[in-house]
Image (tube, rainbow, N blue to C red; front, top):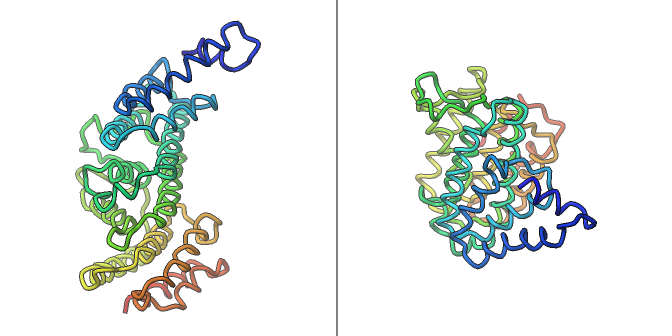
Length: 312
């Protein structure tokens, strides 16, 4: 693998043209036989292939293989990538962090560039869906660590660092922003992610949260979640942007590293605001609430007070 990549780098190397042909054959194989993508991904991310993506050619090839895979193969690939995050085939913390970041980037590219969401809906979030498994993987490594009583095979080695956790948090936020354009009014990715977080948070024998919040913040979020449950049970077509808004705010209130003032979160909130104008169910929200969240100058405490008022 090292020789192959080395020959590809510069056109004056002896086996350059041959190496390019061999490399192109990899993506051609994935296009001709989508089911071969599982073996190809494993080969490119194994000890010889390594998950490191400094080489631009290799990075693009992995992305192309994933985008060529069928849904069943994607499900298997995501399961394999999960195992690679837990055991990145190195004992060096820095190398492990780098490989985990690359995997998060690869998953984000998949969610952003996947072309067949219309065929995936409305079963996109069934537990056998590659998309559900992807979001569950990201949630797991973004906000939780295995408890002391968890099975050894679930414990990341080397441990998942704070920087890796932050990387998966950023990945989740970006994925949900992309999926805003996919939701069809019946499927709410934000609401499902909230459900994933709540389910893991109530499984202390398996998971422990990576972050803890003050009791007052926890009480505010708990009230918001109860109100969300009421709305979800009473309104069949709860607007999807509302769910994303609640998720973004909840993560910020938990102090999971999201800052309402940062451009990435501001973009997500702006999308929620503009999208809400297309929904009759916008009456569920007080319009001034969006203004509070879109104003970067508002302190977190005031945002908490204002947003909790939407649910009464």
